[in-house]
Structure formats: structure tokens, C-alpha cells
Length: 124
Image (cartoon, rainbow, N blue to C red; front, top):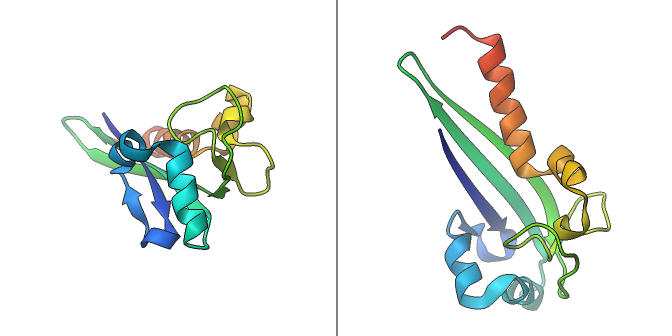
């Protein structure tokens, strides 16, 4: 099992994607938010890809959540860009959501549910 998470920013041509870890280390979540706001497009897409492999098959599942970045970090939960990412149709950042709320609408939860659906409905 392999999991990869990324953050696509349309203002940067969908960069950094899975390279977001290094961008977070370099300028932090607030720095990322400031960058896209300065470019005039705060949209963001949180993404997760899973690869499951056994002797009989390889299965890839994906999940994504569209939203936008806010300038001021909010909330105590989560990690990475969670304090600045607001999913569509919500006002709270990922970091302000209860874990079960984040899982229900988040990119990782969607990817894991997609993987489970494939694995429980297909033959090895």
C-alpha cells in the first residue's frame, strides 16, 4: 500500500501537487496561502492517490476535495495545510473540522472509500 497526498494550486499551474511537503517546509501553510492570494487565485484542490498491490492485482484509487486557501490560519486540528484550506461549501478550515467531518468530505477519506469500494466489488 502506498499513499501520496498533494495540493494543486491553479494559480501555480497546479504546482506543487505531491511536492507540497517541501513547499510547506520552505514557506509554511500561511506562505502558500499568501502566494496564491498575491497571484489573485486562492483556489486549491487537495488530492490523495492510493496504490494497493498484491500478488493478483494493482488498484489505484483517488480522492480530491476542491476549496480555497485563507490568509489567516484557523483551527488546532490536522496538519500541513489544514489551517488554511477551506473545502467548498464549508466556512471552516480542515483544522477547524471535527475528524469525522474532515474524513467525510476530505480527499483522503474519499480515496480510501474509493479503494474499499473497488476491493470489495472486484475479484482478485
